[in-house]
Image (cartoon, rainbow, N blue to C red; front, top):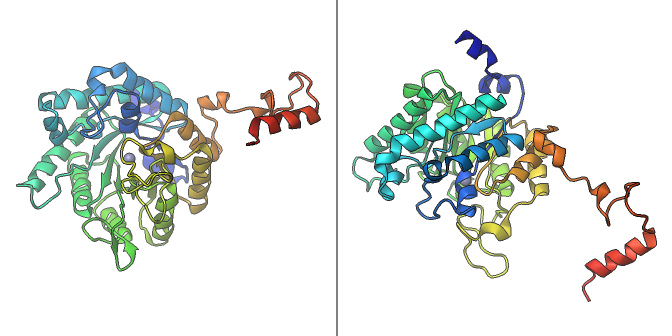
Length: 364
Ligand SMILES: [Zn+2]
């Protein structure tokens, strides 16, 4: 046991206190939807049971690309969602399986493993006994994460402050001394002209109340892309009493359409959420710039949510000066036949290169 403890990597809070940045790659739900192993709509991670080898591989791929954390893919593997697809009987199995694989990959790669709870979508007065139901959902998922040896808990994507506060209390009750990262999902609500949760709590006030209740890291995840998430965090960092988390979606959201739920196709004006968002996908430079900006702001817990892929995680890691294993294959355009100048490339006069480039790029 002691030997095992010694081998464990530095913990989340130690890293943050030492001024280190922690990268947490997320976005599994959208990854597997795109790959054809998960249904958009219900969005339940059945792939954990049907194709566990792919989930394990995705954990490994994100670490290869620079993630410091293996986030167990238990997002939406909760009682409400499993009942929705008639698989409530598989609830414990799916959670334990996702957690066990995450722990194994974290141990093999020297990274941290996080358990994951999330929005239940039933934090509504119209749902009978909704608070009791949500408490039970949080309790069982947190207890399974603790049992699996999670290094910390990620509680995320809460549009309601009230539900996020319940999540903090559940983490404190059932995960005891394990740190919790609690993030809100800011859509487009405002109170007095300032961003607010769906239940009308000013976002910065919400952060501080969650921190007072015991959240170790607070912030935003999902809904907003870097362009519309960062301005909120720039304000929050002035008054926030806990380390901040920035975990945007990988889409180009705008002031007019601040959340990807409201995003429209720039060409046709049609709504894009959730399966046609590809045309506003962030590119690698967007994510590189995002990484530079969070570094300037001093935000130390950084992740990528829906729309994430390994190449974007690598861009984030490299923007922070890292060289994850995947950097061995980062672009080396000096060896490109047209763009590069490597000695080993066939000799091509600059003049003919320029002419050829024009032939390739000019619209006639
Ligand atoms: Zn997301």
